[in-house]
Image (cartoon, rainbow, N blue to C red; front, side, top):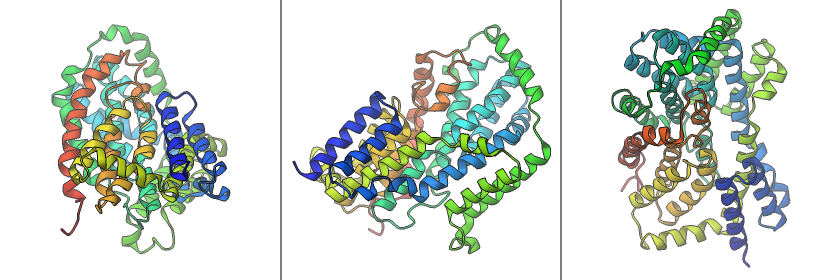
Length: 434
């Protein structure tokens, strides 16, 4: 059995574990990395190299900075201030709530943004006498859409950067480059939900939510936070984002890298008392960290053994021997958008990005278009309550059923898919310069 075949078998086993979640995602990913080392597909000293990558460090730092915004009450205050400006009209509230949620999710983990704004939205629903079932699914959708607009908005974006770098692309993705397709998708998604999609939301009686709304109002009254710490956190957060987004333009990218900026911001937040050391440690999503670290090693093994090329050749053969770049984009969008309804979008991206890159390279095309299509498709996780953590978070409070997500999410998937499939090859041509 060749090393390439062994690597493909490992990838299939990991994929099955991801889809079925028979074992936790992080364990499946790290198990795949260890298996690659034990079978000699990579040197044993490389098995845990993914955990030391700059992408992993970057995300860990941003987890801490984001947590400081939640612990000080800054994120809650920002959300409450903007959403309250929209008044009590259901349509205006929906538009305002989705807009501010999407904006926050550009810079904060979408799960955290959802958790932070959910009590705000519930409080306003109580004041406006609007059923929470009309607002909470859109809240989750907005958080998911906002995360597509920046490098740190959601883990799959960092996976794309990581996968391109592993394939030999130097500095392949800028901080806001995802926003070139993420922002249009976000705008279209918010407008669709405000004017069309909301008609497919369940309209349960507000009486069903009496106890929840009463408890939320009490909690909101107590969640004022520390104004001084909120200011300090806001300043730290703004500086970190500016350094990460405009480091090259400011001429400081050679002095402080993205991961250095994130970690330094996290350290200063702890030293300034914006959150405790224990809270900082607890804020790091270790599932994401280990999934990143494990799948990076599996991706390297695929490249080293030729497994990626073997998969690419087989896929190209199935698609007709010489498929167009657009055909590849459509196929991978469908696969990614389907898988992400039932498994982690992080896992979906980690599985598909190396394969998409290998196929694009086999055809001599720029893989960035395919990778962007995969990432954006993985964000179209609207149709099930398990597709994304934000969807799951609102399930209980909104008293939703499985089919509520199907009805509300089908249209969102279609309109967002149209945006991705139309604009992605225009923004990132398959064969630039030709």
